[in-house]
Length: 283
Image (cartoon, rainbow, N blue to C red; front, side, top):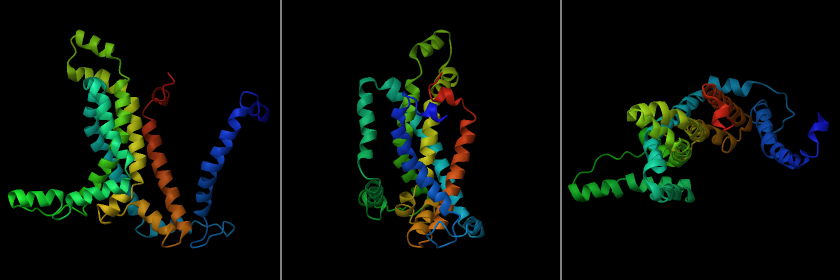
């Protein structure tokens, strides 16, 4: 086995393997090990215990998992409905203007996420852009929607929209135009073409967009802090508190391990329903 690993054609991969082991595997193993260390200790050589995991389920910390997963799933569903028409337009309709549309959606990524979220605060705050304009133009000032669960979800949809859109547009662009034209020539309706050709052939990009958006959204924290006023407490907030203010690294590590397990299981369940070789373009 070692002879095959150090074969001339594979020696060039050794630095990359060492980098992955040191930069990814080692920190991950350290977090897993810390999750079994007694609470509020900082040494891996203490007697290992499952007390940190028991504390999570004994308290209300597990509820934050449901909030994070629920908001992430809602974000994915909303973005699926919103992004597909835009992705289809970028691939099939906009033509030479598709580059401009792509640039418009990509520009926000060059600005800090926190700055963009605080921009929504200025938009929805009392006497701000929206409510101030309604009051000055119509004399009507509705209640502010700041610090609500709905606005938290809106912030997540806004932040993660490019990640869903670009992967979905890539999937739509993979559908051969000749196949669609042949289907129309044979008398297929637009709904039949969408159901039998567009959606199945674009599914690799759509699935990747779903998974990427879900994994990013389940770890969201800034949207809840800024837009939600911590009305909703995601699991990432509990992890941050455990590692910083509480100085309880073992509990934070246990929460992190559980989050990785939950997300990993959900992702694997989704991938089992699809042909991974097709999604990765191997066949």
